Length: 288
Image 1: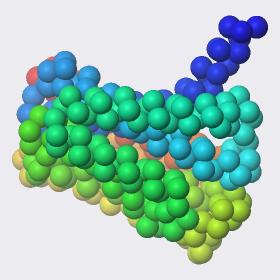
Image 2: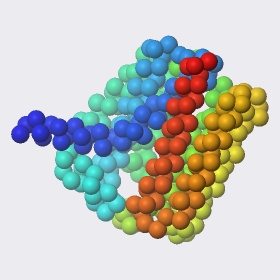
Image 3: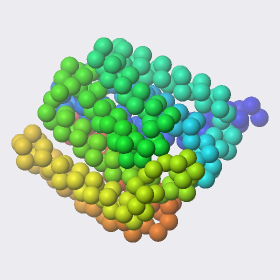
Image 4: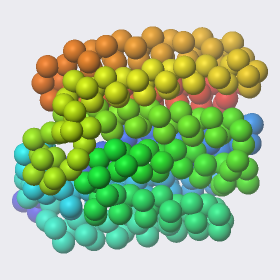
């Protein structure tokens, strides 16, 4: 019985922190390190960078559920906290532990990575605590955090302001902003309960989705810059072209989504497509 309860809680934690998204965020740091170095980082740099992003982001996910209980009862009643698989005290302990692990990993990378990590953590905490209610400014804050993980990767290897790195960081900001707006369009009912001024609540779901699609299309356009600037070769061009065709397909599907669950599924597909881009980029560098 005890084993089954622990297993259930373990599954709940994995679901709570959205492990697939955290892995993608960890890869953002790895890509940042690779771009800044122009080669593969050491195992230590890679593991510490990945761990920093993973656990800092896990903390933000946990804190989000702590503050969003009433919203999740409507938008996501299947999540571990509304279902009472995990208690409030357990979430608080998990948030503290993941924060400490993430910041400790950052400290081993150096002072600058630690400062950047602390800033990213602070943005996530204050977003969940209060600034989520601001709507678009809150979306921009979270997107800044995601973009910051590329900078964190660069700082871990001593080059946080690499121009290629900053371009990828801008791409991450734009893509995530589109996704945040799209997800808000699927969460209107619950967001009304917390008085969150999302674009979907202000202008309606259809307008919000069209705005999100503009950001996705902007991401697609910017993604070609590294090739035309001569930073990467035709292998990158072929990869990013294939990825962008898939993105266009899922954006079209997102715009036509009829239900909230369908819309969330399309946004998830968009995320997974970009995750594939990150994986392919890392593999491509390893093989060269």
